Structure formats: structure tokens, C-alpha cells
Image 1 (cartoon, one colour):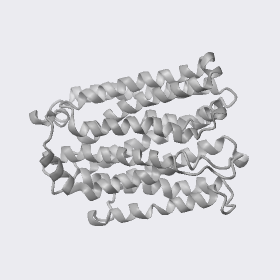
Image 2 (tube, helix red, strand yellow):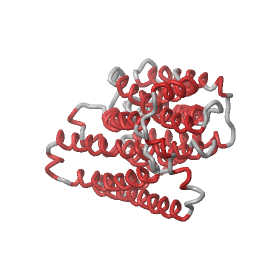
Image 3 (cartoon, one colour):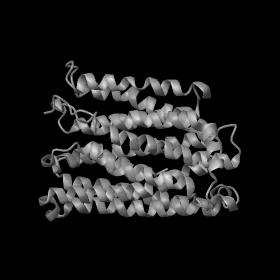
Image 4 (cartoon, helix red, strand yellow):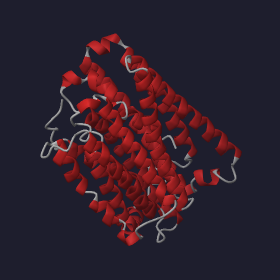
Length: 370
């Protein structure tokens, strides 16, 4: 599932963006998150009402556009005029990432709508695939930075080019598999005749009544995570690690987020009625990170933030996936309501992220930056 690979490629390259935009006095991590997540939330909301009849089409279109977008990004870094006009370069990056968000959201929502018809294990696998995108992005950034640390331009070109190749291979694989398995797979990709019509308010309200707790849990989970990551937790003292602190924070998060997303394939805990409790407990991470990043105590940054990425990412992946599966596969929903619930839950992710983007404006800056 390559729907989030492009975004993960962007956030794992904060060390590339940070020196370029140092004169603009902005938190680049928060800036990248906003430019991606606001358009993504809007598209996911629209898809609740305008559901594609054939899910195969938006997935193919979305992956195709993402390939083009990833090819454009390194070109921006190689244009000398944009390097001299840093403000122009920043807004060019924002526009490209916004375009990336639109088509990532299209693939993301369509994929979950597909998985919701195939049972809980399918939802867990899709979530795990999203987590794997973060690991792939982190691995590529570490490798390219190690081998080409003295030339960020070449490093970024290779980094984004390899990512575009991965999505291209994903696209080819998807086309081949869905073509060869028409009777098995495509029956879940083609929606029933009335699924493309606008749902009535009554139908939507009835579905919301069933899944509102799971919807709220998913939204809150991502409010907590995206308010802190990547913007705030990368806004910390770099220490002896230098720009590697950015890479390590995002890499550790991506690896353990992937692990957390995969665990529901083996065990679903707690039960549906209690699944909101561990999500609420994740609010403690605000205290854990802020006491160090704000310099309340000297807890040896950036190692404190890097270490706490482990439980932070694990709980994000696990709690988010459990709530998502419960919501999109609710036993009280009929098949039609499950399809509706899958788009509602996909929007819950983006609604949570959108609220988080608003909250990032109120987050303080780190008190002991180098």
C-alpha cells in the first residue's frame, strides 16, 4: 500500500529542507505537515459523499500522479533561481506537497473502502502497509544520507527517484493483480449501482450513530500524534548528532509505528467498548515531550525524544489501527453501512490531522535549540 509513501518521503527529508529554509524562521516539520494534511482532509471529507463507483480507477490515477509528483520534487532543489529565491522555493514545495496530498488521500480512502469489505485482517494489513511506507522512506533517507552526505542535491534526487520507482512498481503490480483476478478481487473494487449516489442524511446519521466512538478514537489518536510529530518533536536540541537528530527521530517513529500497525493482525486488545481508553492515555505524551523540549529539565536531548518515539509510535500505530478496524468493520453495520463507515473512518484520520494542524500553531518553540 503506497498511499502514504510520498508523504513519508517528504517528512523523512526534514534534514534536506531545514538548511534550505533556515532564513525563513519557520518550523519546517510543521509546515510540511500542514501543506499535506489540510488538502488531504478536504478530499477525504468529499469522498464520504462522492464515493467512486470503481475503486480501481482512483487507485490507478492516484498512484500515477504520485509518481509524477515525486519526480518533480528533486527538480525543484536543482533549480538555481529557486535556491536564490528561498521564499519561492518554499511555496513551490508547499504546492507540490498539496498536490501529493490530494491524490494520496484518493488512494488512501479507496484502499480502506476496499479492505472494509474483506474483514478485519484486511484492515490491519492495509494499516500495516501504510506503516511500511514510513519504514521504507526512513531506510531510503538513512542510506542516501550516509552515502551522499556531502551533496544534498544529488542525495535528494536519488532519494525521490527511488521512491517514485517503488510507487511505479506498486502501480504495475496492482494493475496486473486486479486484471488477473477479476472474479475474486474486482468484485470488491466495483461498488453496487447505488453506491455512487449521494447518501441521505438519514443513512449517514444512522451509520454515525453506530461508529461514533470508534470515529472519535481514531480522530483523537491522530490529533495527539500529528500535533507532536514531526513538527514539535524535531524542534529540539540537536546536540552532537547534528542534522542526524531529525533523521533518527523520524526513523525510530516510522519503524515502531509500522510494528504497532502490524500487531492487530495477531491480537485485538482491548475489546471494542474499551478501545478508546488507551487512546485517551496517549495525551500523556504531551507532558513527556514538552518537559524536555521546553527545557523544564535537562533530559539529554535529542536522546530523550528519540527514546520516547518508541512507545509514542507503537501506541499510535496500534491504537489507531484497532479503532480503525472496529469502526470500519462494526458488527452492527450492514454491507452498505460498512462501505459508508470506511469512508467516515478515513475522514476521521484526516479530521484528526486537520485539527492537529490547527493546534500546531499554538505549540511553543523549543527552548534550547542549537
